[in-house]
Amino acid sequence: MRQRIRPSHLRTSAAFVAAAAIAAAVPAVAAPSAYAEEAAPALVISNLPSTSPKPGDVYDENVVITNNGTAAADGVTFRVRLTRGLDFTEEAKGCSYSTVQDQVRQAVCELDLTVAPGASVETPVRFKALDSALMEAVEYGTSATGETPGEGYDDSYRRMTLTADSSADLVAVGEDTEALAGGQQSITVQLRNDGPGWIQNQESDDQPALMVKIPKDTVASEVPKECAPFGIDGPSGPGGTPGKSTYVCWPDDHTIDVGEALSFTFMLDIDKDAKTTTGEVKATSVYDIHPEFDKNPANDKAPIRVAIPTDYEPGPATSGGSSDGGSTDGGATTGGDGNDPEGQSTGGTGTTGSTSAGTSTGGSSTGSVDGNLASTGSDGTPLIAGTAAAAAALGGGLILAVRRRRASAAKSS
Picture 1 (cartoon, rainbow, N blue to C red):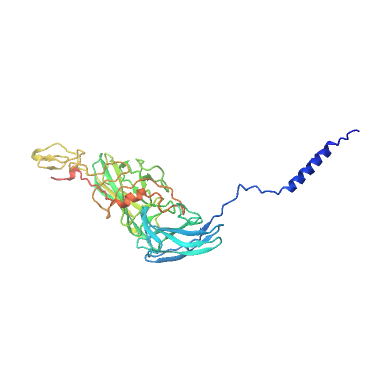
Picture 2: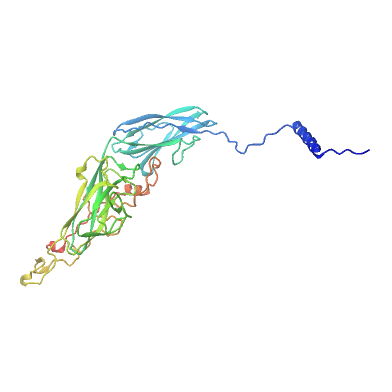
């Protein structure tokens, strides 16, 4: 009997049918998904209404916390931070209070509540504006899971800026000194805040500053690193650059407290044929725009005066102890040999970027400030970021430095 052989395509079809039948008999098991997400809360908070309080006003609003996640948030840690012109009205139960860097006041509150998925709750935010309030910011919120928030901002932790209905009076303080033609002389000028508001501009590049016009017939040979050459409408070179006619000086943290004076010391080389000469300082901003918060422009400008005696060169001695060119006293010529008339230098050290210690001419005491214009963002700037320089400047009881010299020809024994 001959064996019949089936065509190959029929054998393949039969095998497929048999395999399908076996697969149908075995229950299907779903493979685990590599993208399966664990249930978790996702808290978001509402924005606080903006405000412009007067000193003494109390702000009292509620923040709505909503859970957009897939799991409940069991307990919420809610944090509020206030800049130094604001303060909390009272201490609430369940909150711990402290002062952190840059004099930021902080409250951390443990809210004993559960926020289910899709649910919302409210919590209050209360603070008052102090007498020094002006440029302020408030941080508030939690984290997406309800735990303690970190640094930076997102939908669960926000920042609100505000400008109080107040002002700050920037004052320019100049210098009046004496020098010898052909010699050197340090000058110290100041930018002072007479209040009532403190100043910290983090919302633009137009920070408060002091414009310095160097006196004619002198050259700025040593310049503080906080002072940059000023061009047509703004800084035009790195801080500390010598030999320019106009400079703009500002604190690196853009902060000036009430009563604080920032000092900037320059060393001037006096031309050999110089006569008494003047320059000028002006309270302004980094881009020479008058600050809107300064309502008293009368004290924005002050002179720099360098008196140059004209009779300091000694002449031939005459009988009786007089000289033709320089003033005399009992036969001793007191004319200009270029030395300090009082036997020691009373000027600054001339070190770039430093502030000399000396006698105050401008009111409150101050000290050296450090650094150049830092990039400041808008609402992304943490309240306590970059505060090492501010903490040093505010805690040190700063001292004004104004140096005065008298030429020996102008001094009588």
